[in-house]
Image (tube, rainbow, N blue to C red; front, side):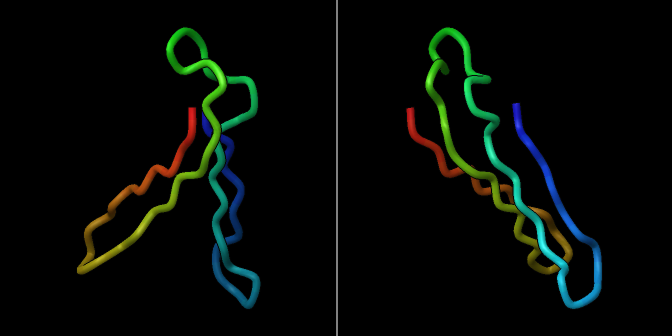
Length: 52
C-alpha cells in the first residue's frame, strides 16, 4: 500500500509517496521504501526505491 501526500502549486509544492509501514504480506512482508514520479518530455516515469 502506498501513502501519498502532496501540495499542488505555490511555494510549498511537493510530493511524498511512501510504502505504508506493515502493509506488505507474503513475500513482500517487511517491505519499505519510497516512490518518485518523474516527468520528462511530457511522459511520466515511476521510480520505486525499496528494501525487503
